[in-house]
Length: 159
Image 1: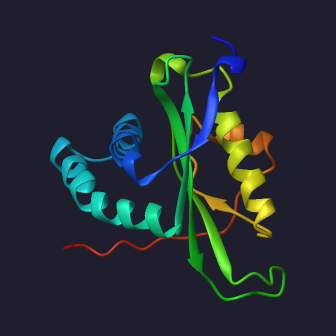
Image 2: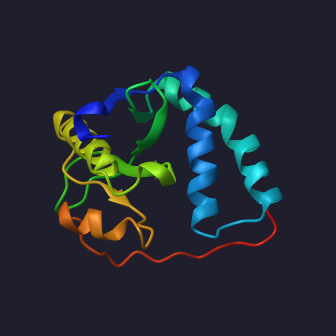
């Protein structure tokens, strides 16, 4: 399969099941979560995803092979965010759910998805985008110009 045989299209609310499948498999591939935790994640994320796709706060792109099968995807969450000295935008863009089915990896599909996302973000006037990179995705993101930042995380137990 060549890159020419892959079509990138915007996802619609009816595509929620495939997006959730890709999200689940992404975390599974990274060794994150038990089967029960992944099942719970999909259950909880479903209603949110349907709303976010419908209201445009989350945008997603799907990569389709020649038969129309969704073989990969990725999306961007737009969040209200205060401007800062280097970025006067009042929205923050976070790329989520980058995934390619295993048998379609190493064919440039993730790159095609990322280029579609980045082009859309630039069209919207956003000046930056953030993401959390898996070890497998990091080389692609670095080639596209992403840099490491000083982000930190604190997790609260019990929820």
